[in-house]
Image (spheres, helix red, strand yellow):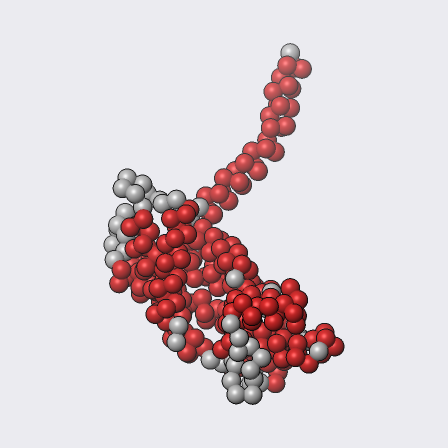
Length: 258
C-alpha cells in the first residue's frame, strides 16, 4: 500500500518541472502579443532587413548628395556609381556603414512602430474603430520625432562613415585600412567637436523632414491597406501589405525629399 502511495507523488514530482516552463512560455507569449510590444519587435526586424537589402543604394544616395565643385568622383548614373563602388572598395564598399545603419535602424524602427501604436491608443475613441487620416498623420509624426530623438547619434555617425570611406578609397588601400570604426568615430566626435551637441548636430532639419515623412507614411499605408483588403477580410495578404508599404513609402518620400 505504501508503495502505491509513493508512485503518484513521484509522477507528480517528475511532471512538476514541466509546469514552470509552460507557464513562463504562456506569459512570454501573452506579453509579446501585446500590440505595442509586438509592433516594437516586428518594426526592429523589418527595419534591419529592409535597410540591408537597399544598403548599396542608401550609401550611393549619400555620395550623390555630397558631390560639388572639386568633388566629382560620383557624378555618375546609378549603375555606374554602383560599379565604381564595387571596383574601388569591393563588396564591403557596397555594404559600408550597414552595420552602423542596422544598429541604428533596429531601435529606430522599433521605437517608431512601438510609439505609433502607443500614441494611437490615446487617439482612438474606441478600440474597434480605426483612426481618421488626420489623427494617423499626427500619431505618425509624433512617432517619427520620438524615434529620431533616440537614435540620431547613430545616424550622424553612419553618414560620417559613408563619406569617410569614399574619401579613404580615393587615397588607396593603405589609407582605407586605417579608416576608423563606428565607436571610434563617435568617440572622436564627442571629444573633439563639442560633446553631446556634436552628436545631435543637424537634428532640427532632420526632425522637420522625418515627422511629416513618417506621418504621411503611416497615414497612406493604413488607407491603401484598407483599399486593398477584400470585403470580409480583416487583414490583406503579405503581397498586398508589401504593395501598400511600397506605395506609402513612395508617396511620403516624394512629398518630403527636399
